[in-house]
Image (tube, rainbow, N blue to C red; front, side, top):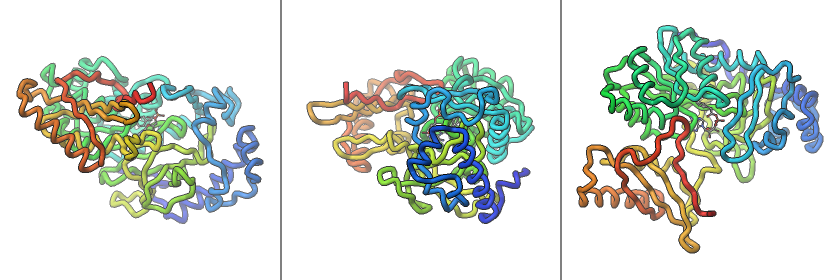
Length: 431
Ligand code: DLL
């Protein structure tokens, strides 16, 4: 396995490179993006004030709303003729955010995604089945270019046609599966229906991301699919998949620090937090040409670990993302992340990890209902057994998270499967 030089720089060398890139970046956005020129003057700074990464905190934050306000192209730092690709976020939570790429941006992205594949032990010998959606979503094409970068054989499957995916996984002898964790689970379930046994396939690795998932879900997927499951992180505003990825050590996601400068802030005070503390991840794109972003507030919650990883990479790692600050549910005053509930549900005997959290208002009070599917092996008429499962879940949620929840067990296959990002939370409190 050959690593890029930038993945093993000493901290001093890396910071020098980051500082040079940060200086160039501030000048580039100041000169080319009116939004940043104005923001800089509001903060009384100019590119000349930024001489190293130590000056980062002088710079203003960029928010998702800023991308929306500048819809579609006003944050672009290059003429339109230099933009070779557009991607977009789905816009389900507001107006879509649009991002662009120059030829160099696409080349960098391919290189960085290629690094991710190398980090999880994939190579030219692999057949990579890519079930991330192709199109405006960055998952499909982002992963695709990375797979080609390492000269693997890519199957550009996209999402959907689930049974066919299972047949092709088997027929083409895929060794690497790329999908959201929830879709990987669905593929496993659909395969069983057509008598395809994942444990008999040559599949050995999964590279899962685009939605929050837990260690419990990792164990579940590794066992069911008979693979090693790795976590990959990214967001369209910053690039797409490949901003960070686990290595075979499975001890945090290496951030591609030569391209992305990371910080953790307290989401309320916006003050920087020291390494090791949980907070909101903020990313500055050091090399992006088409739409460079300064101190982008991702809303994703994690912590930074700069200790040396056994894999030999010297880049900082972030912990598995525990959720987004705007995903946090406040139920009768108690803060709960859906991932904390998932951790409990996935380990509950007799159920499957297909669940939904329904929030409602009863008078002034919030109520939480957990709907979860029974394992197909459990007969839905064994009343006593079912009551025990329900009580067990309710007890654990109360004990570990401090909230009362109603648990409803559903027959297998009652919750609609998603071929991309799963919808786990249905919040009806404002309806
Ligand atoms: O989801 C890019 C991607 C594609 C990442 C394929 C990984 C694999 P967006 O649609 O812009 O981009 O959504 C980005 O998804 O801010 C996180 O909240 C969440 N997310 C992405 N990866 C993870 C992960 C893609 N590994 C948003 N764990 C991010 C938890 C994740 N959440």
